[in-house]
Length: 417
Ligand SMILES: NC(=O)c1ccc[n+]([C@@H]2O[C@H](COP(=O)([O-])OP(=O)(O)OC[C@H]3O[C@@H](n4cnc5c(N)ncnc54)[C@H](O)[C@@H]3O)[C@@H](O)[C@H]2O)c1
Image 1 (cartoon, rainbow, N blue to C red):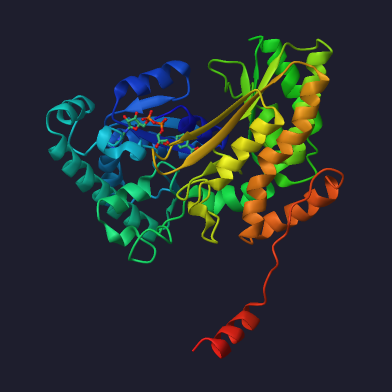
Image 2: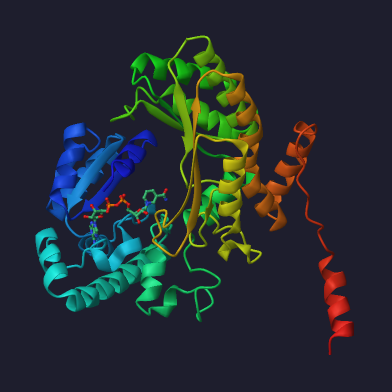
């Protein structure tokens, strides 16, 4: 359990249940008000779920126990789940990231230290049982998606081949979609929308409020549905009490949107309306990460397994003068399974910063849209065509040449025997 799941369920107006084996995690979220109630008894839990549904009350509930126990109860009692995912730390399943069924959190920690081999066997068994339960629920109409935590890959690594799409290996992915294949890729990344982020370095709440307003003023809600969603996100951010620490915000914008907001913020710093601001973004973005089971999961031309997009993103940002650049490995899915190029940019109100923003922000976003366009993702081709027009004076991205499939097939058939 992180804070995100319960909060997301409430913002979306749903009834969310989050299983968690570590009670201290639940207590933190109860204290913060991000979880409404916690249960150890599954019957009582699902009575509370039904009550919330009947009252049409957005609610976030915790189950203190193993997710597999919860899903077994759901399956046995024919309870319908609309949306199901998993956010255990499956990128490190054998190092404590995934708790086997039948062990308390304390017992799991002891076994991990004392008998790693037995622990690994129990992890494998629970993962396979977990997968089989999900399959049954999906057959009954549940929508399951991989949250980007290497869950399906962890099941594949147990040797359970039913999870593989082609039944042979993981080269074509898995039978259930990752959220990037179904949602983030086609709806956001292909257009260049990604998690643009800023931090008010003054630490002042009033600066965050001013930047929220300025960001909203920069967004044209009639441009795309993604803009309207993100406008609403910022409009309601204070009401939804999203900040628990640093005065920071995150919102999804495309290249033009991010640049407009960045330049506006730098102007506000110059005019002493706010203190200095640090821009950044999550590594979970359009260009900054190569990760075939996550960020690049909707790139289907074979280039999803390469590490060059993130490296170019990083190197281009460094060359253009970003304040902080990072090239690193692991980024959520585990060491060796991804490469990430990140940035941070301090806005000090200077003209120098305006120049850096104007060259680096489009670079930081459009490298990934270009990669998606070359993989012939529909919306990224449209996005590149529009970008080439809008940034005509400074930038140009080469478009893919779409070959006539039947011509190619005919030529192959005629010439290769
Ligand atoms: N897609 C994204 O944008 C995104 C964002 C954040 C995290 N992630 C991924 O999600 C995973 C989790 O991230 P986190 O920061 O929340 O990690 P975390 O380790 O802090 O939280 C995972 C929780 O799952 C609990 N858990 C483990 N096995 C369980 C089981 N069988 N039943 C019930 N609870 C169990 C653990 O006690 C732990 O509290 C990571 O792999 C991370 O990379 C993805």
